[in-house]
Image: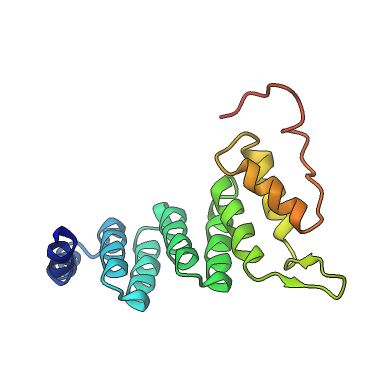
Length: 169
């Protein structure tokens, strides 16, 4: 199968990125791309370290590398770590709407059921979804953000999504 052929090339690709990094140790892009291959090769811890190194050597793109790290953690069901990675993104770029959405979604993954049977999400969950909706009132995750706010018994606190037609960026 083609995927098997690709999988056999992962060690080769990782070695090539390591060589490229030797030649240009300040390229965050090389670390970022190597991290992506490491994830496919199930080298999870190495991939996270590579994303962190990318952010360290290329601080101008640190928000993107931290977002990629958060996405990987989220996709591997490591919700506390994912929420922290998205916090790093938001500290660097407080306008990154998708980081708010995924932070909220990661925290929903940590929610518990209260004695009354209602979902209790960690502190900051509703705020993350509301901030997403403020920045992206008609964004790709707007419906899910509203549904999750409803699931945790929180109100949609932004006025952006309430008027008939509001221009989005």
